[in-house]
Length: 286
Image (cartoon, rainbow, N blue to C red; front, side):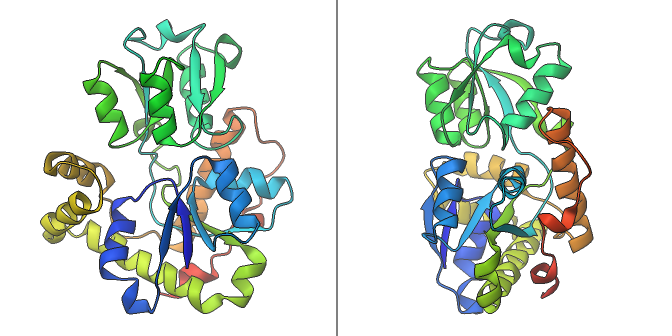
């Protein structure tokens, strides 16, 4: 299966090393540079599965795209709003530039809500489309942006470089959908075995990461998989470790929470209809 994703979180790393082969899957990873390019490639058939923000799928489905979420592995937005060295507080961000992936979906939505709730409305700053976390990190450190939503390890590296934590999305959005798996709805109908197997392997990996007796093995997997020191891997493990995998009902509730964040940002109207975005049948095949 051809996977396109922004990063390799703990569950994916563990699944790649311990569970995909047992399900008869060979998973080829491509790093996404932006959600627009990622979902364009998925819809074009260049990839089979995507790990993306649930909000990205919601926005595309609202525009008529043939996409469905088949799994939400966990909850929590593991991003922090990071300000440049010259921006020590949210109040100091007014009149500055925010680096985002896509202006109307993804973790940019959470940044808009965090800023508005702190008294910095959307029209008080400029938007700089930059792409994935790595590209947003580069924009921040190179002075092309004054704040960005970053996750591990880029947020920690930005702090070491003199940047500041302006807000913690995980604390504000604990019910937000985390690792989300999306596919083309029509493709999933004819490749049901592969999609169900992928979901089972990822479920198994989430359970493995959640079990505290596996801590050292997960940290070792993370350190070996990425350009991370053991200390960085341990901190990443602490941030990404979750409870047991979500039930399909809990996944639906998480997607609904993501839709509510869109509404809070002024980007969703009407009544939420989960069936438009989520096919829970694959998650039930454990």
